[in-house]
Length: 581
Image 1 (cartoon, rainbow, N blue to C red):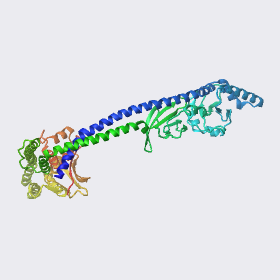
Image 2 (cartoon, helix red, strand yellow; image 1 turned 90 degrees about the vertical axis):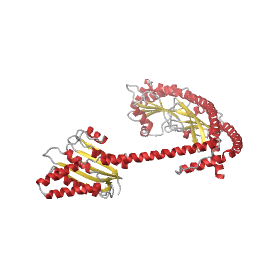
Image 3 (cartoon, rainbow, N blue to C red; image 1 turned 60 degrees about the vertical axis):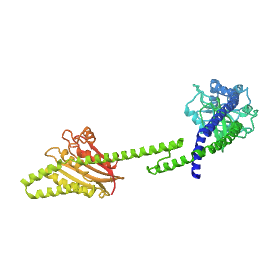
Image 4 (tube, one colour; image 1 turned 120 degrees about the vertical axis):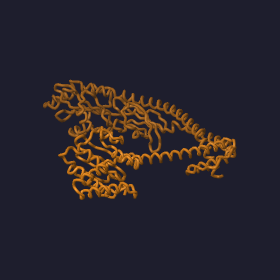
C-alpha cells in the first residue's frame, strides 16, 4: 500500500508539475524576462547617452589637433624649409631659417598650450624637432613598430592616431602621457620628410569625464585601441570588453562571478573607446525580489490545493490502479496469461478491462507474427538450398562415362573419389559448417574433377593467410564461385585461365576471394547477377545469388557477395561473412 500511494502521488505530482507549476513558472519567468529587457534597455539608453557625450567631447577636443597636423603636412613652405635645414652650413642662415620655422609653427598652435612637441624625421636619417627635443635616438625612433607599420601601409597625407598614451619620445618631466599622431606627407619636389610626429598633453581630455557624478558602483573607463587605459574611476572593467569593430554597442560580461553590463562608444578621431559598466544586479535587483516573493506565495497555495485534491481522490482509485500496475509488470516480463478483470463500471475498471483485451489481442498477434516469420525464413532457406545448381554433377558423370570408355579405370577412380568427397560433404547431416582448411581441400577435389573436363585449360592457386585456417563458413559456399570462374572465365582454346583463391581475416570479417584473369563481365551483368536467381542468356547466376542470399539471411545485410570486374580483364568475387571459429 505504501508503494502504491507513493506511485499515485508521483503521478499526481507529475500532473501538477507539468500542467500547473511549469506553466506558471514559465509565464512568470517570461514576464520577468520581458520586464528585465525593458529595464536593461532603459539603462543602456542612459549609459549610451553618457558615453556618446564623453566621446563627442573628446572628439571635439582632439579635432583641432588632427586638423592642425593635416594642415602642417600639406604646408609646402614648412616642409621645404624643414627639408633644407640639414643642408645649410652657415650658422646664421640656419638660425634664421629655424626662427622662421618656429614662428610659423607657433602660429599653427596659438590656440592651445597642450602641444608637447613636433618631430620631423628625414628620409636619409636624422630629424628636426619643434618645442622639445626627443629623448631617444634616430635609429630607435625608426625601429618603433608604429613607425614601420605606417611606412609599410603606404598611407600618405592621412593623420593617424597612435595606439599608445605613453610619452616615449620627448624629454618632458611633467607628464608621462600624451595624445600622439603621425603622418606621411605626399608633397613632391624637394620634400625630404619621411614622417611627422605630433604629441599633445592629454590633461585637456579629463574635463570630459572628471566632472561626471556616477553612482558609486558604476565604472567609467577610457581605453585606446590596444586596451591601454587612459582614464578609470577606480572600478575598471576595461579588461572585460571583447574585441569588436563596432563603433558603439553593449556587452554582458562576468567579472569573478559578478555580472556587468558594459556600454561603449568609439571616439572617431582616436579610435579610443569610452566604456561605462553597471552591475547587472543594480538594474534587475528589485525585479528579482518581486519575482521570488510571487513564486513562494504561489508554491504554498498550490501545494495546499494539491494535498486537498489528492486526499479526496486517493481512495476511489486505489484498488483498480494496484491491479492494473500488477498486470502491467507481468506483461513487461513477457507474461500474457492474465486473470480476467473485475466487471466494475468505474473508469478505472473499464481501463482494466480494455487493458486485458489489448493484452489478449497482442498475444494473438505476437503468436501469428512469430509463426509467420519462422515459416518465411524456413521456406526461403529451403528454397535457396533447393536452388543449388546440379549441372556440374551431370557434367562430371558424363566425363566419367567418357573416360571410362576411352582411358580406363585409373582416371575413373580419381574422378569418382573426388566426386564422392564433394557429395559426402554436401549431403552429410553432421553439420552445416566447414573450416576454411576443409573447404579448400574440397575445392581441390572439385578442381581435380574439372581438370578432366577442361584438361590444361586452367590453373588454381590456393592461399590461406594466418589466422584464417580454422574460421568457419557454410558448406558449398566457395565451390559455386570457383565453378563460375572456370566455366565462364575461359577465353579460348589456346589460353590458360589463372585462378587465385584467398582466405583472410580483416578485423572481425572473414573474406574469401576468387580472382581470375578471364573474359570478365560488364557492370550490367554484375548487377543482374546479384539481383536475381533466374538464369538469363545461358549465364548461371543461381550459384552466386544463392551464396549472396544465404550469407545475408544468416548473418545480416552487411554481409554477402561483391563482384569487381571489367570486360576482358577478369573477375574478382569476394564473399564476406563474420569471423568465427
